[in-house]
Image 1: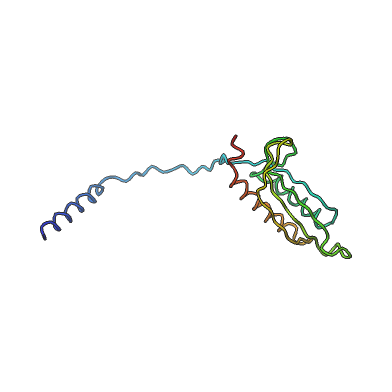
Image 2: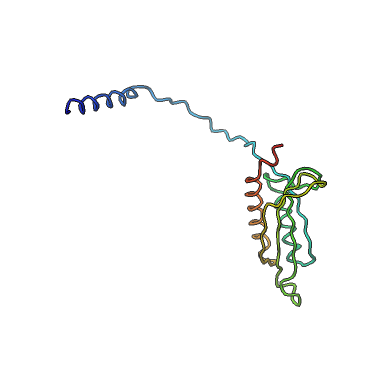
Length: 154
């Protein structure tokens, strides 16, 4: 019994020791960042509403998509994510206070085909929070684009 344990220990040491004494691979990887060929998702934003905070949110969202490398803001009849944004004043008597918004994301193969529902969100926005809300909606759009990327690979 002790011999078997001793033989097993020796076999393990021999197997582990085979890597000892070899020169490690010292090839260094060149530090040259390269552009990643990632996905770019076509996206369109359609806004409905005439309130100031909602219009600012729609503008911030379009600006975010237009300046991002993850998205291509387009109105062409191509496969894309459509972001439907509807806003109304939170208090009709005081529209400058803020707005309530609803966002629906759909996948559109073309303008002639039925749209596929992907997600929705509701919330409140004001002039001071429009940029942060647009950032959050942009992140959600990116998650949806990532989750449904197979729709664009046709």
